[in-house]
Every structure is written in C-alpha cells, then in structure tokens.
Amino acid sequence: MLSDIDAGKVNLIVVKDLSRFGREYAQMGLYVEHYFEENNIRLIAVGENIDTLNGTDNILMPITNVINSLYARDCSRKTKAAHRAIAQSGKFIGSHAPFGYMKDPNDRHHLLVDPEAAEVVRQVFQMFADGIGYVRMTKILRDRNILNPQAYFNQNNPDYYKSDYWRKPFDWHATSIRVILKNRVYLGELVFGKTKNKGFYNKKRIPSPEDEWIVVKNTHEAIISQKLWDTVQKLMESKRQENSSGEIQMFAGLVKCADCGSALSVSYSAKTKKYKSVTCWVYKNYGKERCTSHSIGWKTLGTLVLEDIRRQAETATNHKQRYKELLINASTAKQKQETDKQKRTLKKAEKRLVQLDKILQKLYEDSALERISEERYQSMSEGYEAERAALEAQKLTLSTEISKADKTYENTENFAALISHYTDIKELDSRLLNELIDKIVVHEKVTTIHGEKSQRVDIHYKFVGIIPVELNLAQMLFKSQEEVSYYLLTDEQLMQVKKLEQAVSM
Image (cartoon, rainbow, N blue to C red; front, side, top):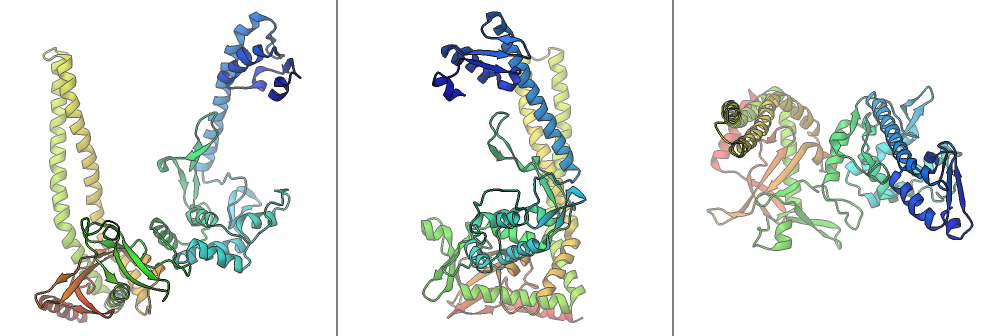
C-alpha cells in the first residue's frame, strides 16, 4: 500500500476501525499527521466515524489510538499469563513435539517417547560423553543414514511443510546436536520462558534470565539418565577442540594448574596421532613471567589417574563399610575445623545485626525528635544500612555452607557406590573421567633432597574432593622416566599406607 501511495495510485484509505489500521499509536500518528497529509491521502475509519477530511475528527484520533494500543498490550499480557499458567501445570504447549518425542493422541499437552527418534537422541548423548566431537558426530550420523530432526519431522508430517527445502535429509549440523544436548526435555522435564520478545513492538527474541524460567520435572518419560546428562553438561562447559582424527582429548576441562588455576592445554602430534603432554595454558601463552610450565606427560597422567581409580574401586568393593568409615572420618575432620570457623563468624554476624537494628531504631528516633538534622540522619543511616545488607548476605552464605556439612554421609555413600563400579577398568575415557572426577590439579616439578625431580598431582573426586593421603595414593610424589611412572612415597607416607592396609583387613 505504501508503494502504491508513493506511486500516486492511492488517495483514499478506508478501514473498519482504527485498530485494523494499526495499534502502535506513535507510528499511527506519524502516518496520519505527516505522511498522509504530505501525500494528500484521506483516511476513513467507519467504526469510529472518523474522516480526516473533517478536521474536528482528528482530535479523537490520538486518544483512540492510545486506547487501541493499551488494549493490545493488555491482550498480550493476558495471553502470556495464560501460557505461563499452563506451563506451570506441567503441560506441553509447543506447536510440535521435540525430536525424540511425539504428542499424546489423547492429550496434546503430554509427550510420549518416539522409540525411533529417542534411540538417536541416546546415541548423540552417548557419543558426546565418549569424547566424540560435533564434527565427527555429524559424519557418523550421516554415514549411518540417520535422518536429521527436520527431515524426520517432515517424513512423519508430510503436510506440515509444503516446501522441499530439506533436500539432504541425512545432513546433520553441529547446531542441531548442541540443541539436543542442551534440551532438558530429555530428562523428563519441561522448560518454559527461555527466551522472550525484546519489547512489545520489537519481536526479536532474546534470552531470558534463568531465574525467570519455568521448570517442571517428571512431566513425561525421560530418554536419558541424570548421570549421563550431568556428564555431558560438564563436557560442554569445557573447551573441547577436536584433533585431526575428530576426537576430543579425554582430560578436556579437568586438568588445572595448581598455581594460576588455568586449564592445562594438551600437545598433540598429528604425525603419530598421539597426545604427548599437558602444559599450563597461561605459561604457553604469556611465558614464565605469569606462571611456570606445570608440564606432565600424557601417558604419565593417564597411568597415575587410572591406577588410583582402580585402587579406590578395589578398596570400596572389598572393604565397603570400612572404606566409607574412613572417608567419613576424613571428611568430618576436614569439615569440622572449617565449619566451626563458619559458625563463629555467623554468630558474630548475627550479634552485629541485632546491634545495627538497635542503632538504626535509635537513629530514627533522634531524627524524628529533631535531635539530629535530616542530612545527618541520611548520611549515617546509609552507612549502617549498607553494613546491614552485607551482613545479611554473609549470613545467608554461611548458613548455606554450614548446612552442606550435613551431607557428608550422603556424599560418602554416593561416592562409594559410584567408584565401586570401576574395579576392572582397563583404560580411561571422557565419560568415566567426568563421572568420577571434578578436577585434577597439577603442581610444578620440584627437586628432592636427592637431586631427583618429582611432581605432585591432586585428584578431586566427586562428592568427596581430595581423598586423604592414607586413602589416596595418587596424591603422592612421583617421578617419570621415559613416560613410565611410579610412585615415590616418603617413610611417613609408607607408614600411613601400612596402617590403612591393617585397618581395611580388620
């Protein structure tokens, strides 16, 4: 229509009412008051009996446009509220089911597992957990002639899309895989409100803060386990660069520098197609002014971690109850000192909060009785209020940390059950490492009194963190020669190991 106006083909516009012409009052005013007048266009709104040829009618037009705009906003608000209410009740409100599911024929708000597509979803999660990168995975799926999500939907709903745009049904893209791996629907959960319009008239979708999401659990059958989901999410958080074979090194995101805290980057030989060593990323990029190398051989690190997992698994399996008791005692000993300190700090914070309440109350009374000026009251109360807010935040943090100490027994049970499954492992992989380990901290090499170089590696296991030296033989000094590692124990450490052997044999 605007093109026809510019071409001089239009001189009159007739609408049922002004809301049919537009509901954005600012834009409406721009057209009617300027554009139409400049182009000698007459506007008639039959419902409101408005005719721009009659000047007196123009007085009502801005008011009518504002009312129409407010009505549209109110309708939008009510629609969003209705959608949120439906989502909070755990009902699916999407136009079509996510890949891996189908809508229940008896209830369009409920999802059922689509066996064929669900199997593909399981394969995608498992391959990623096993260290297969996005690019290699797309090739594997294409070689297996597996339909991508869009092609699969089109195959099962031939009348939904008329276009034949998807001419390569077996072509997968890394974006499609990432969407699957980040979708909590496969845990049996529904998430609503992850994106929103930038504004009422700006329909561009932008991410919503996570605290605004609506998450409802156990709304339908899950396709993958929570354990596999957690492993995959942790892998996705770390930088994962594929090597020339399309594989991702298994320690990605796990190995950290003990001094600067950065990740250790891996060196890979394209010629031998083998990993050689890991080195501090900061040192490699900025030199010794920022950090030291913390370099450790790939084979040495793998052997060290594998042997410790085996040892922990064997002890947890053969001496289950004693092993859990030792872990609990160790965890309690570590936590008790910190928890006592937190409780003392919390008590001080609570005492100071009581004092601040009294001070602020007295300050308010002095201001009300005009014992101090309003300016003085404002300057003093502002400082006290800021201190009070900081103490309230500290109190919440401390209370949370103290309550975590009560989970010691639960965490020990979880770890003992988890580690006991790995007694007979022959080699490491990404899935295993991310299921068992939070991080591996590598220290710089040091020279012993005998002139030999040694290095310390701390393994932080899930649920229990660093296992004490008498239980964790990986938290030891070791030396490497031609990539063959062995443990170098001090006399004191040997005594601790002997005590452990005696304890678990009782």
